[in-house]
Structures are given as C-alpha cells and as structure tokens.
Image (cartoon, rainbow, N blue to C red; front, side, top):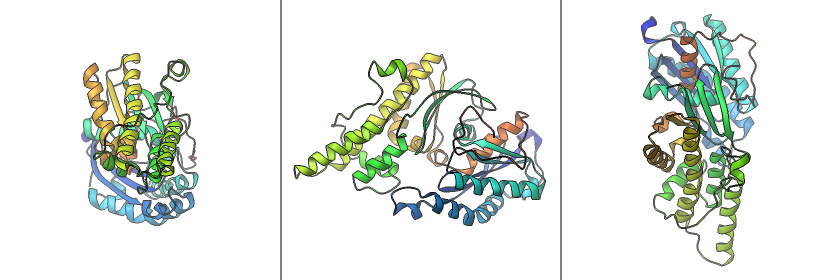
Length: 351
C-alpha cells in the first residue's frame, strides 16, 4: 500500500505511559486504526496501577497489538512514513517498554522515530475528530496523573503551561473517592454513572478558588482537600449509624471537580483572548464536565472541542496524531538513542 502524500503522512503511534498498550495508525488527520490492550483488570484488585504489573503487560501485549493495528489499517509496517512513541511523562518502566519497541520497529523498517510528549498527544488527538487545531488554543488536560491548563501556540513546539495540579490530579481524586464509596476502580466511570441518579446537595469545597488563592494560583488545581472533605463527610455518616447516600455524594463530588475545572479553563480563555478550548485526558470522558464546559463556553462565545470518549483515554491514536503533525510540520525526527523521561515537562513536545 502506497502512502498518499496529499492525504498527509502515514504514522504509527505507540502509547505505554501507564496501563494501556495503545497502537494507532493515522494518515494526516484520518484515523485508520486504534487498538488498545488494557491491563486495568490486573490492577483493580490493588485499587490502583502497579508499575511492575503494567510493564509486564505492555511487554506481552506489544507485538500482537501492533499487528492488529496494521491489519485493521490494511497496511504493512514498510508503508508507514514514521513511528511515534510516548517518551514521557509516565511510569518509567512502562515508558521503556514502548520506546524500546518503537526503536526496534523503526530500525527494522528503516523509518524515522519521534519521541513525543504524552500530554501534547492528548491535545493532538482532537484533530482526528475536528480537524486542524486553531492556534493559539487553550487546552485543559485532566487525567489520573495530570490536571493542567496550557496555551498551545504551536502544537509542533510552542506550548506554554498556565497552571497545573499542586497535589491530587482530578482523575486520582475520582479513584480515591470511588474507593471510599465502595465503587470499582478506575473510579471515573462508576462515579459518573452513580451521579446521574443523585442530587447535588452536599456543599463540598472548591479548591484554590478563594480570593487569596487566585492571586498566586489562579489557574492551578487542588483536589486533595476535596477528597478529604468527602472522606470526613462519609465517616461522619457512618459514625452516626446513618446510610451513606452514594449517588448524592458522587453527584456533589463530581460537581465540585467539574465546576473548578471548567471555570478555570474558561477564565484562562478569557484572560488570554483565546476563543478555542480543547479538553483532553481520561476525565474529559466524564458527562458532567462535557456538559458544564459546553454551557460555559456557549455563554462566553468560546468554541469547545472535546474528542469522543474513546479518544480521551490513553491510546495510540493520539500519539500517531501528534507524530503526523510533527512530520507534516517538518520537525526533525529523534534518534535511536532517544531517552524516556517519566517527568517530561509539557514545554518539550518531543524528546
């Protein structure tokens, strides 16, 4: 199969930053394959991701997942123009498995390799659904490990951090509160489902929204205090021998998280004079954050772009999308000695 230069570069992307082995194939802004092998069931009994278990799962899943993606796209490895792989941030061992595999495939096929930033890839994946990203744009990235606000001037290289979480990320808070309520791991989807049958009746705190906080932490996030407040409220009910209204707690907690996230994201757009907001990361699949963001963006004349839920969680498609953007922009590829960086800053789009 020949690559059509008019349709954009054909790129294979590999994602192994946490517990999902993702392999995607993209031509320009068109998604051809998105294969995922998840190890989440292996981590569920521990209530969180175990790095060593994740690394072993990536190792075992890599070759069959790559082959499924090639078969789905109807191409051979020799047809791709480049290989992109998550170089960071993420779990150190998990990243090493993905990068080692990408190097092996690049060497075997004689293809250039791009080590990319996981967070920037969460922004790039939106182009597969909504086309080229207007620049500049504001991006809100919310996942189990990250809650960040970014100003994206150029997805190929100029990304400015505006704010980030200073303790628990939003997704981490969802997991911990779900555990308190006896809901399964990962906590985001169960809380979302429970909240639909609940009422927002408990006034849980909104972190870093007081006047004094907005001076130094205007666009930063904090969910540790919220998590503690939920725990204390639940414990007080249990001590009193009263039933815990799980659905109401879930709805009230979810509202507190989504209120802060969307309010600060829209505020960042207004402050920067930017009229496009992109939301990505696993928490972007939450129904309430999508609805509340749309409501607030409509009120202020801001265009909201959120990928479909399947593209919000970690996947190879997002890595391939960023790789295709870099190839199209003429960015220099990496080398076979490219490193991994578990704490890779968002200011580095490529390794």
